Image (spheres, rainbow, N blue to C red):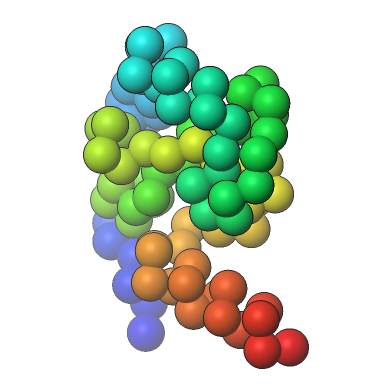
Length: 97
């Protein structure tokens, strides 16, 4: 079953612009200063953390403080456009291999 919703490209561009603005704010700088990836819990230099949308933009997520977390590049690339439940299932699958 395809769970994607129809999000238009204009809305995605708007949310990406909001995300760029969020990265400049103090609350984001404080989050990445801790150096922790939200997903794997490993420590990284702040410059090595990316902003990840918990609910991806393509799935209707927004660029808000509550939907944006620091993620290492590996986790962000692996998560792609998965929702939190789908991501947890993916991680469980990897652990059982």
